[in-house]
Length: 311
Image (cartoon, rainbow, N blue to C red):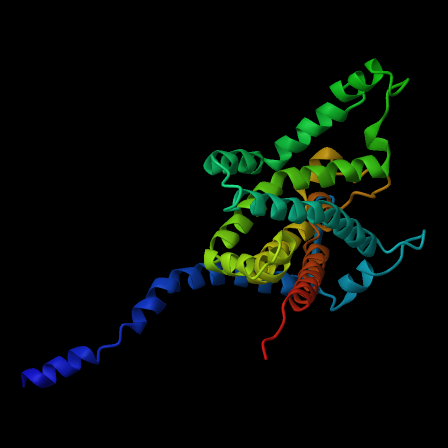
């Protein structure tokens, strides 16, 4: 009798507790993310907007919202393609230096050969810009580079320029400021993620490579980078998703206009214009679906290009 009771106790499966512990995440995800996503796709097939005090719809229109988005305007420009190009350009300009500098800093601070002291202090300092709200950061840059701001005054006093320079009237300067802000806001977070990835690599791998006569460059490309690739892929994909959803920095810096000539208008700013002016949920839903498709395609391309299947 005692033996059978012991066998029953040993046969008890505790796997169900794992499902119980992760159930709150999936329930929360389904309620607050999955269901709104399905409703967004559903609303994209309807005409639903406000004209003055009158509400039009919801009326089923099929793919008419998508056709409207890809219809050229009177100048022959397809707005959504233009804004998609703006978004990708702004993300690439800030993400490439962000990844490179973060990777260099991560290698520098985790080097056993250099034995950098005060790593906790440097981590805190590097991460601090990430704590600043993006809107506040944009207001700071707008104040610094405005026609009456300190940058113009300093350049005039130094004799670099003879008259006030309008930084917000030129595409290269506006985009440059947006790229610089995105870099400053996120390179600290990326550095800490990559540092954690490098610190997770067994030190014996580096010692073995050095014993075999590998120099620092060979150790980086043959040991560090391949073993760090999962973290690096995760970092690049999450940075890309955040970049495609770029909104607050260009919105505040250009006051929602995407100046000059809408060259800094992003996809989310374009979506926000439909919600802010006419409450056009149908067009906004169609733009959201297109952003989702673009994000999925680019994420798949990045993942496939940076990972290799093991034989």
